[in-house]
Every structure is written in C-alpha cells, then in structure tokens.
Length: 277
Image 1 (cartoon, rainbow, N blue to C red):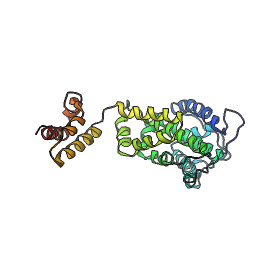
Image 2 (cartoon, helix red, strand yellow):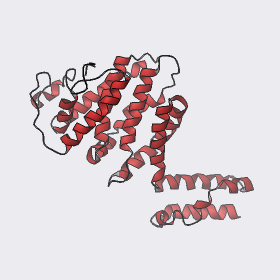
Image 3 (cartoon, rainbow, N blue to C red):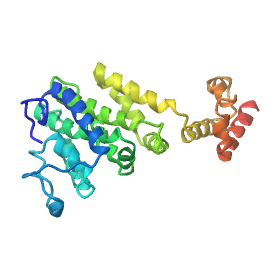
Image 4 (cartoon, rainbow, N blue to C red):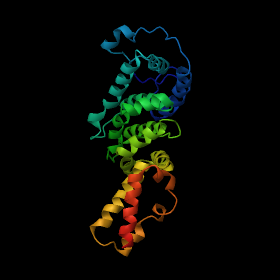
C-alpha cells in the first residue's frame, strides 16, 4: 500500500486530506462489492487463492482490488491479516510519537477498509467476534503531546471512525457489539482521548459515547445496581449517599428490562431496603 498522490481514483493518497478523500470512494465501492458477486480483475502482484499461504503483496494493490479481495471468501482472511499487519507496524513508534505522514497514511488507508467493513451488518459482527477493535485501542491510549503529533492524531481520528462504524445497535447483532464495547475499555479510552484529541476527534468521540448511551443495557444496569448495593453494605447509608442514587432506579424507567432479569431485580430490592433502614 504505497501512498501516491496522483489522483483520487484507484490510487492511494498521501497526506491528511487524502484520508478524507479516500474513505468515501472505498465506502461507495464497498457498497457495490458486498451486494454483488464481482469478477476479480487480472492482478500481477496479488497472489491467487492457491498462493494464499505465501501471503499477499498489497504494496501495489488499489483500493478497488483490495475490496474485491475482501469479497473473495478464500482470500478474505489473508487480506484482513495483511491489513492488521499494516496497523500494528507503527506500534513501536507510538511511545516516541515519531510517526511520519507517510506511515500515518498507510495505517489510515488500512483503517479505512476496516471502517468500510464495519458499515455492513455481517462483516461488522465478524470484526467484533474476531476482537479486531483491540488492534485500534493502542492508538487511543497514546499520551503524546508535542509538535510532531499530527500524524498520530490522523491515526487516532481514523481509528475512532472505525469504532464509530461499529457502534450500530439497531441490527440483530447490535446487542453483541454493545456488550463487547461495554466489557472492554472503550469508554475510559474515549474519555482519555477527549483530553488529548483535537476538536474533530472530540466530535467523533462525542458521537461514539452518545451511541453507547442511547440503547439501554441490562448488563450495565446490573453493574450500576451492584456497585450501589456494595456501597450500601459498608455501613449505615448516610443522607449524602442516598441523595446520589438516581431516582430512575426505583421508578418505572427500567421496569421492562428488569422484568426478564430476576437476579438484578433482587439486587435492586436489597438496595432499596438498605437505603431505607
């Protein structure tokens, strides 16, 4: 995936503007590729399925060819493996913030293809099952704050774009995706990035966190109730503690969710008894 600044179509772009130009084009092509059965174009530098174990040469692949390869079930696993290698190639430089624009662009191009896959229901679920988002978390953990952080900020922003494409909870597998992000460290990482990222990153982060909070989650509710219950058991609850417990826990806000979860309902009843004693 060698970056080249020689046109918008069929070539990798370089620099921050190229990242923005690149994503819509691949995304548009991805829509066609995933809803049809395309014929792979002749490729001299890309291995066939019979050469799968030898690895694919992605250095001269165009975005269109990569999307077509992702459509091929015999090659998809190897392509994703190669894209993952592109992502982790810059890990050693994260602590020094010495990532060049060229390196940043290569990573962002790979991330853009992951973002396209995240925009589709079935491939989104497979990315979650394979725990692919874990490969993006190191970019959100970085603490660098110096004059050469722009390439890293581009990677961070593109990583957030991939995560944003995965945070769609209105499909049949939305619950699985939501549980994955709540059980991992995504929310703390988002809060961490809000302190470090620029204005655009903060806007993307706001949308991601907003999506996580829009859909009620029984698992998250259980953790909240359990935490309050443990605190109430330490000693006699004070008035200050009682005042901090959300009143929504005891009205009808979560009644429908709790109806199918007797264990959480029991914990809530115990909490009520503790704070009323």
